[in-house]
Each structure stands twice: as C-alpha cells, then as structure tokens.
Image (cartoon, rainbow, N blue to C red):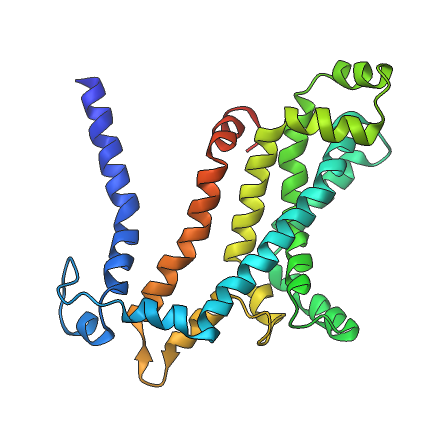
Length: 267
C-alpha cells in the first residue's frame, strides 16, 4: 500500500512536470487564429507552419546556431579555467584562499545587470560587440565560479595519496592531471558541463545586449513574435519547444555522470 502511494505520487509529479511541455507542443502545432478562437486539449487542425518558418527563415534558425556556438565556447572556457582553479583550492592552502573562494561565489550571486554596463563599454572599446566570443566570455562571470565550486567538492573527495604516488612514478603535473586525475572526477565534470551549458543557454540579458545581428541568440530572436497585432502564440510555442531539445540532448549524453554527480558531489 505504501509503495502504491509512492507510485501514484510519482505519476502525479511527472504529469504536472510534463503538462507545460505538452501544452506548448500542442500550441506549436496550431495556427495563431486557432489558438485564440477556441480552447482545445489537442490540435484539431494539425499544422507544421510554425516549424517550417523557423527552419526556413534565416533570422530564426541562425539564432539557434549562434546560441549553440557561444554556449559551447563558454562551456569549454569555463571548464578549462575551473579545473586547475578547483584543484588549487582543493589541494593547497594559501593566504586568502577562503576569502577568494567566497569572492568567486559572490560573482555568481550578484545580478547580471550590475556587470552589464562595464562589459558593454569594454566590448565596445575593443570591438567585440555582436560576436560569439563576447557573450561566451561574459557568461564566464557566473559559470566559472559555479564550476569551481562544484569541481572543488569532487576533487576534495579524491585522496591526496593518488597525487603523491603519481609524482613518485615520474608523472609530470599536466600528464597526471589530464590522464589520471580528470578521469577520476569525470562525474563532476559531466555535472559541471551540464550546469554551464544550461545557465549559458537560458541567459538573456547579456546575450541580448551584447549582440545585434551576427551573433543574435534564439532567446533574443523569440522577441520577434511580439508585434503591433499581438503575440504570435504558435510561433512562440514552436521556438520554445525547439529550445528544449539541446538541453534534453545534453542531459541524455551526460545522464550517467549526472546521476553519480548528484549523489557524490557538491551539487
């Protein structure tokens, strides 16, 4: 009886979880006039017009490409800087290490709007406005501290004797770090990559302000559905449905690492 209640509660949870996604999917398969004219639990007049527009209009599909480019760049950059930084915090004690670690987290806590104007003026001066690297570097402001914080928890769980044994065996630090140490925390790397990807993917303020046309992301392109005649609900729903796909794919590829990471790491 107790297990039955758990299964019922779990089923209700998943229904509530999937209901918004299902509703957005059904709206994406209807015309705007159909959505506004009648209430329906499923699309009676099925249409793929909204998806066809997104895949054929360069202004739309380029938004997904731009987002994938700068999000991937940010994830790689964040991990590249966070891995050695987290190792330093987990293995060494130095003057001000606790204060510096807390300072990193304050960057993650601060609102993005606080840093927006300095970034905009800096990038305007050096000519990085409307480039993918501009958004990727800006997102490092909150992704690198998060990555360091997560990875430090995983690294602290690895015995120091492994480092000492590897150095006695003649391993150089780069060889030891890449071939031995990182594989031991691959679950943590997977979890960190997931969070870096997702936080960068859904961020709007930096992505919209630092781009104009060439690197305009999908989150900014979706504002085109608002016009003088109102909101194009069908097109908005189709774009929203497609934005879920990259995140779902990332979860699928790192699902095993994420399961271990949530169980063992600082998440």
